[in-house]
Image 1 (cartoon, rainbow, N blue to C red):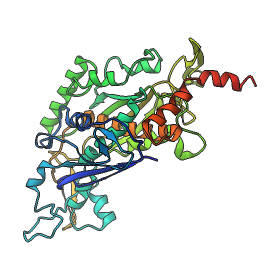
Image 2: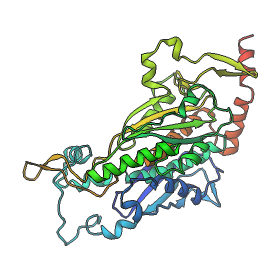
Image 3: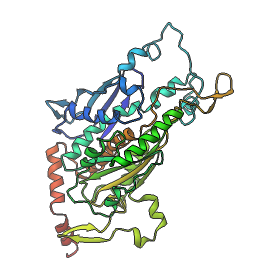
Amino acid sequence: MIDFVTAGESHGKALVTVVSGFPSNIEISPEYINEHLKRRQAGYGRGLRMKIETDKAEILSGIRHGKTLGSPISMVIWNKDWENWTDKMNPEPVDVQIEKISIPRPGHADLVGVTKYNFDDIRNSIERSSARETAARVAACSVARKFLSEFGIHVGSFVESIGGIYPKENFIDKFFANKINSNFSAEKLNRISDKSPVRVLDKEHEDKIIRRIKLAKKKGDTLGGTFYVVITGMPAGVGSFVHYDTRLEAELAHSIMSIQAVKGVEIGRGFKMADEYGSAVHDEIVLKRGKISRKTNNAGGIEGGISTGLPIIIRAAMKPIATLMSPIGSIDLSKMKNIKARRERSDFVAVPACAVIAESMAAWSAAKLFLEKFGGDSIEETRANFLNYTGQLEKRLKENFNK
């Protein structure tokens, strides 16, 4: 069973992650991890913090000469902004007076955090609940992403909408219609979307969204949006219906919903399927050149908690960021009086970054259930199990039903 844990605060000295359970001999480098950390920081509408930090992961253990050892992998991402917060965030008691924050922001973890943990300073809630923590997640999940790539499984994403601005034609419809070449790699989505400052797939759509973001900035407001994550190359048979916690779509939904500000997740056509007849949405089973396939992919590559072999399609919705430059109403907990919410340095829009984080979490969930299926203490053993299974899938099914 693979696992990871993150530690660290938004303005603390560093973020740390420890990853365990992966087989040995996976080739991975700091440059590979840092490339995805860089992608997480990009996007039009990000705040000043992104100009301060240049996230780079320093590998401390678990990798030797560019290959995993099978032992826990530990990494650290140093916070450059720590220099400006050494008194406010020092683990040791300090002699200087530190101002306590008593005004929570609606939509953030400020109030619920101090309520749950009995804090006398909202700063304690802010620091760990911040999406800064996702930098450590991206580093951890890069190991999963690299592991999957060894088997031709790739994860990509693109932004569908920001601030209610949708494209005239949605590229994802080709996936639902199963009109995508069987050799298509989700990495291609990233190569296209990463060229856009808002990670959309066409210039006209990009221009409209940037205008909406500029308007939000002028108003001191923020915007949310929707995005798609696509996993290609996943073989049929990953996941299970035997237990509730082994269902592939449940694992993916949990991972994506764990990302700060994500408020909705659907697999395949999701909620739209609820409005149609079954005959219009279920994916007919066909043979294509001797291989089992589907006419469509409305289910998003998963049926009964198990992968079908078609691209896995996940759509998620991110709410607008809670920190507003033109604050809305709140209360001062120290005086129990109505007041405007406080400001905290933040982004105006983070949907493009959220999509990259969601890629990472989806890669983790996919790798988790993939390893449960194929096992192995080394990448070579996992690969042998994988090839033995996928190389004779149709032959095995035919033999089983002709006994």
